[in-house]
Length: 297
Image (cartoon, rainbow, N blue to C red):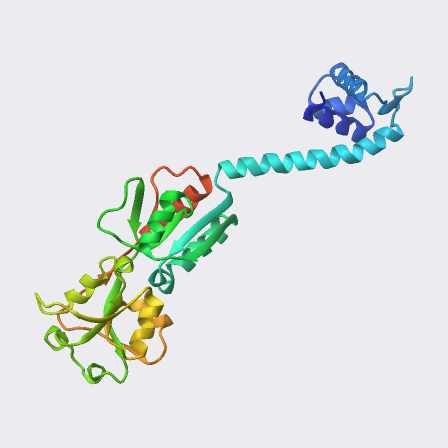
């Protein structure tokens, strides 16, 4: 059976047209090289070289044709060898990344892609907008590798996470809303206001952010719910109600939406990077290493 070493030996002799020089290049003894070439010719059933008594070596016609194929095969083999080694080091591969809108508007998703392009240019990051709970399910199932999502109190078994930089929370409203005219907004003013909020399967503690801006014990009056941040901003821009949002979301709101701080209330939106605890992909592990270093700094 022909092996890769046979191709390497043949190409060396075909290049040098001299057994001794080819053997030196290959760091083997000339008799060994000569025996290997004869073995290859026997295997193929054709002569690849003509040899004279003056030690002159020339390629036969069959040898000339074989040289072209051998060079191509060796190049493909070398590429495959490099690829598998790079893959084992996490330098090539594909990474599927999910994100909530506030992680994108804060620039965290962009930073992740830029890190991959600069530090791991042969790792392709595929992004997909998803809410937090679907992200967690997809990470567990393997449909997603990394999630930029809202921090939850307890992550499912097998999933780990680290925090992204927190974002300040603000009261968001239509510019024509009566509260937009006030210079100072206190929790007491908000007791009878109409709020819009996320749907229950997307909110992940969001209602606590609304409750936090109200006087203790006050139940917020939620008039409508939205499936995601963009839909929530649309309801606010339509003056359906007010809400509490992460500061960076103003970047995707239209100019009818304004933000106002609430006196005496310090509230932050906390997103996190979630991933499998026992990640089998070197590429995913390499991206996570870069993300930890970047966001920890």
